Amino acid sequence: MPLRTGFIYDKEKRPWTKAHSDWMSKLEFRHELQKEAFDQYDCHIQEPENRLDRIEAKIISVAGAGPYREPVAKLRCLKGIDYITALALVCEIGDFRRFGSAPAFMSYLGLVPSESSSGSKRRREGITKTGNIHLRRLLVESSWHYRYRGAASAALKARREGMDERVITYADKALHRLQAKFGNLAFKGKSSKTAVAATARELAGFVWGAMVESYR
Image (cartoon, rainbow, N blue to C red):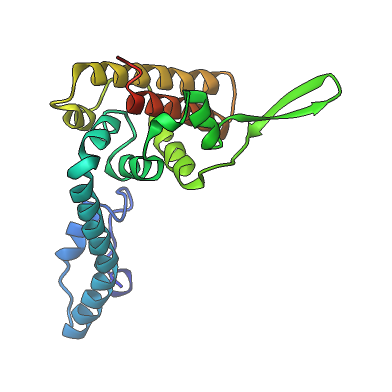
């Protein structure tokens, strides 16, 4: 709509950011009907975004109360995991102690390598992709946050405020190890898909450890 009426956003800047939104809100159209048409388009864009904001606010409210508060707070100390992923893990797994070890939890998520055997030969292939698809996808998405090395961000530090020092130390251990994992695999020429799957597998191990308090 703006383009058709002669308004062109700076090509050097990224569209659909807050700056872009602020720019559109200040546009002055020559005709009232043009402004009406623009407002209708803008409402169409804003409505789903507002709905997602309301849903996210509800998730945060649930995650911060009752039996979910403590386990969600622990998981949020891990880089790449915030309310939505943490609450999904807590709700879908329930008692993490039903998995006797971190590898058992990794296997449940389908993040362990599959094997192809022929006679005396054994060859490892891609992950099995069995088990809980939803949680596997969430952890893979979380693992992209470990692509680059760096200290805990300001947002991550804020999530850790008031937490047990042992939990923070454990989360820092995960931060350094998973960043190194991703970086080393990339340095060896592995694809980003392979690197993120391997990182997600180890992240799952740290999630299990945080929930069963294996860091004690």
